[in-house]
Length: 514
Image 1 (cartoon, rainbow, N blue to C red):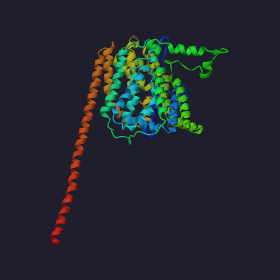
Image 2: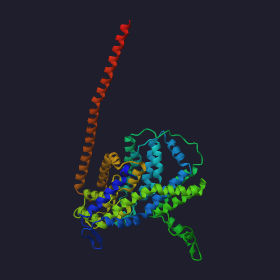
Image 3: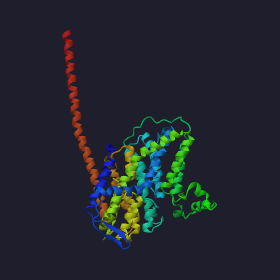
Image 4: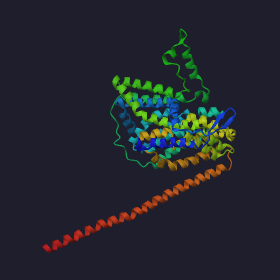
């Protein structure tokens, strides 16, 4: 854990949230608006109570992560998972770029229309294994999977909390949102295919002759279908209430005033289009049991896989808890409301809204709570006149900064999974991130009204910063090349001199003998 810096980074951010609470007074939101208060420091004694609050707030997410761990351990216990990875890699062995395109747009577009970043996380471990087998480096694999989910969410047309707090529908700003999402996904494909350096294959890719893998292929396909059916808001997009009516009809079948459906499946079953992570987690757990029956796993083997899944997923549960501990610290101290009011209280512009969204990505790593707390604070300031503006700006900039945020849950999970250091990831993603930030700001400025001249100044400043970074990096590379060249020449001359002396000695010996 220490080797990859993940928990060290989280510890630093937690301590920073505590330190800020000693210097920034807290504020709260009530029916009269924003109310400034006094300093509410988060002490070390408060960490315990805040930790309990954190676990209660994210228990559903933690359970979902644990079920994913169990699911993959059951897959490996069947003895067919490695063959599944081999076969998938063999199909794209001669056209690895196609696999990148399918991965990026598959994960990104489904997330864009679902408006939730968690469901597609189920497919990430499998895709990471295939990408590694095809020879893609760890950072490129993370960007192709986790990056696609995050940037797909940046252009999501349906986000429940954002639409709710801004009184908007899925039809509002749909062109701007889809443009943002597509720019992000296309840029990922272009960046990976142009700058991926690790072209050496991870071992020999061969098509496995193992049979009985059809259930695994069918499983992943059905899971994808259920994600689309369950998380796409059919009523919000198309006004289709067929799934809701069908479930209500099933529950109306009763015996002695007791619903047969509820008695068998429970009352927590939600209709397609209204699923949450616990609904999908239940399906995933059921799928694990079915696969163990199909492949005739012994009861002991299943429970062994169950225990291994919990053990392997536990570090990810800790990551989720620590990241959201920052959220609870910030919320209880009220410092974000104060900062947001200071930034947006008098004037609203591209700079103000972008900085607010960036801070939210660090202080509020949970997307649901982030939208709730951030937009509530914004609607109490001058930003209340710009609902459409913040519907796009907040979502795009907040999601984009999740690519580099030290509390980004999906990013930290991927870094831990691939054993990649946080600092190495920042070095890899830095220039790409700046270019994409500039592109997002341009799209927002073009599609939306309400910005003043600060928008142009802000974008020009970012462009200048980007040009400066590129020039500096190129100059450093040229200096390194110049330093290496003389060394190579000296070593060559030193090697040649002894060889000449030896040759002359041999010639003199031969002449003396004659």
